[in-house]
Length: 224
Figure 1 (cartoon, one colour):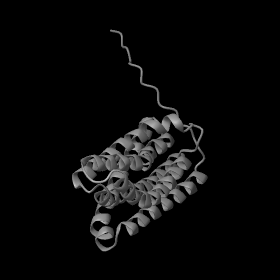
Figure 2 (cartoon, helix red, strand yellow):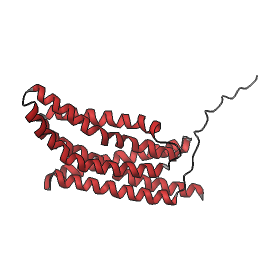
Figure 3 (spheres, one colour):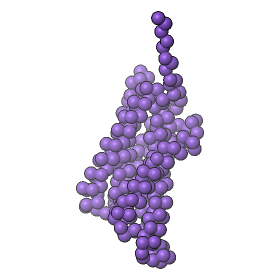
Figure 4 (cartoon, one colour):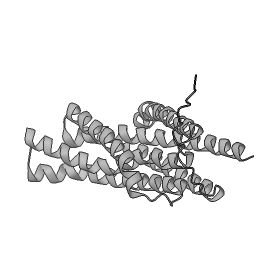
């Protein structure tokens, strides 16, 4: 019964991770379009975006275990991260275009101004990308470190990757083609809010269980 409930919860969490990955890639494409306007160079915009996403997600993996206590319910932590990502998505919708006006008036044009704007944009994008990188480690605490737990974490990662592919398709061929970056951002924020609410509901129905990391198997010594 307990295994059946855990499998059902894993399936539901996988669906949430599909949605979460979809929202993340919608944000990435939206921010790329905005950065091209703010920085004025596609190559530097791509570099800034990759630095922010790869660096931020790596930091999220490292930072969460050190800052979030083990006593917090993993699914509530996940829900809180999704809400924060959605909130920062709305903030960046206003903040990134404002950076262009501030630095054009302060620095002006030229290579130095472009690089400075790129650095500011990277700093703006790091907070939400760090939160994105922390979502999988948060839920991995619920899955645990046993062989089955590691398999569940791998399934969640795969689901997140599938969602990322869906996000690219939805944003590229529908949202940004028929609408604009504002509409696409609101769609991504709506997905974040939905995932957060669903995770809160799952957390209420799934009492926190601390699953210890499985000890390494001792070698079996046989005597001749």
